[in-house]
Image 1 (cartoon, rainbow, N blue to C red):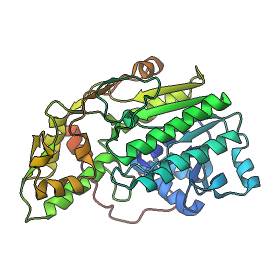
Image 2 (spheres, rainbow, N blue to C red; image 1 turned 120 degrees about the vertical axis):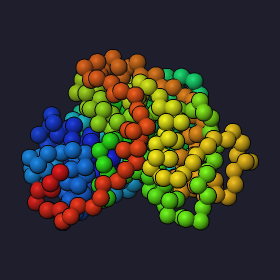
Image 3 (cartoon, rainbow, N blue to C red; image 1 turned 90 degrees about the vertical axis):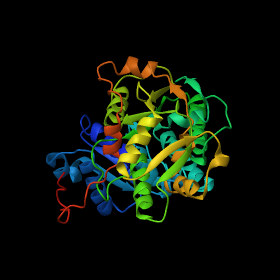
Image 4 (cartoon, one colour; image 1 turned 90 degrees about the horizontal axis):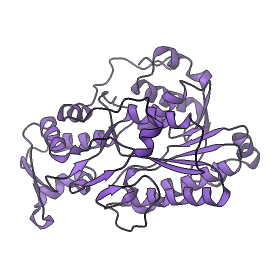
Length: 364
C-alpha cells in the first residue's frame, strides 16, 4: 500500500514496487477513475512502458481517502477492510512547498502521518516505511548521522519542522508498539527526465517556474544577490536512484524495530554549480553571493520570493552520513557527481504533447 503515488517520488516508488509486486493499493484523494488518469500521467513521466501503463487498471487499485481525517474518512468496516492483509505500508504523501504556512504543512505532513499510523495499528502484520527528509536535521552543519533524531528548534522553514514532528511520531509509535518502522530521509530529489506540463513537480521544477517568471519581468535588473556562502553545498540526488534504493531496502528483512536511512548523494553539489545552471536556464541572469541579508535590495528579495524558498539553503554546509544505506544497497551503483549540465536539464520543462492523452493506455 502506497500514499503519494501521483507525486514525484511516489510515482517512481510505485514503478519500483510494481517491478516485484503483482498489485499495489494506492491511497488517493481523487475518485478512482480520475486517480487512474493521474497515476498514468505520473508513471509515464517516471518512465513506465506501454505494457505497464496498459495494465494499470489491473495492477493498481486506487482507494479514495481523506488523508487527514480520522480513519482516513472511511467507515469502521471500510477501514478494517483496507487494512486487512496489508504486508507493507509506504507513506510518501507530503506537502513539500517550503513557502506554505505552518498550519497547512502540519495538517498534511503531521496529521496525515498520524492517520497512516492508525491504519498501521489496524494492520498488525504490516511493515511501515515512512518517507521523511534529510532536512529534519534543521540548520545544523557538519556531518549528520543516520541514527537517531537530534533535538533541534533551528529550522529554515515550516516544512522542515513539520517533517521533523512527523518523524518523531513515527519513532514514538514504533517504540510504543514494538512494531517495525523504516524511515527514509531523502535529500533534494531531481531528474534529468523532462517534466511534463501536467506531471508531478519536484524542487527544481518549482525553481525553474520561478526563473521563468523572473525572465518575463523585463523591468527587473539582471544582476541578483543571494545570501549564501561560496563553500555551501546542496545534496541533489536522482530520484530514480532514490526510489530503487528504497525498494531495495524494503525487499530485505528488517533489522532493528526502527532504522533510518539517509537516501542522499555520496557527493555534495557545490552551490556555485547550481547557480551556474540557473544562469544558463535564465539567459541574462547574473547571480552573486553575499553574506549579509542587509545588503539585499528589493529586486533581490523579489527573486528570493519567486524561487520558492531556495534562498534558505544558500549557506548550508551539512554532510549526510549514508553508511547504513551503503551497506544495504551494495548492488546498486551510486550516481556520479551532479554537474551544471545535469542541473540545467533538471530545470527544463517538456513542451505540451501534440494530442490528447488516451484514457485507456497512456503512452509514455
